[in-house]
View 1 (cartoon, one colour):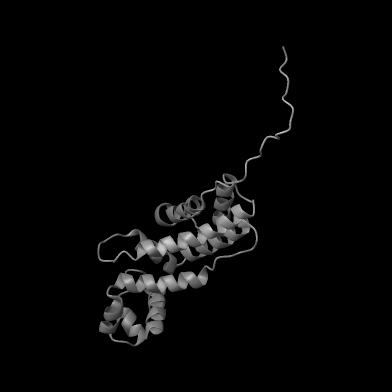
View 2: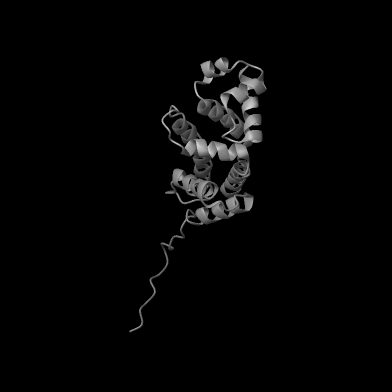
Length: 191
């Protein structure tokens, strides 16, 4: 039943959008009784969040290419593709809305996803690709925040090219800084 209901939720969401994704519509599409859905998920928001979480996890594995830039570009490119779909926009809206009816399952959800992203940055630090004092969480928040802002507020296109440009911009600030040579002779001042 769980798999059928979650699949139906994604289908109804894709066809009818967030407003048209009711527990009743999902129950009819899944061939189950509406009370069964409420008993298991409690609210429409819990149901949609769980359905989209599973879809997001399948659509966005954490890459490990051996290069932090490539990992982040692939990861955020996949996120940009997801945000261009009705399901991705719904997930983002559900995550941003705070109406009091949703037990705060959003915080653990986003904390876990941000940690997955931070792991890619930590690998880049360990390989020497990024400065040792790079804040992995800040790097991930800087890229994802710009993606989310564009998707939620500006309405400008969110695509893989935009994601790649954001990764380039953020990583430029996290590159190791050149160190002055310790054995270099001081340059004499002209008198």
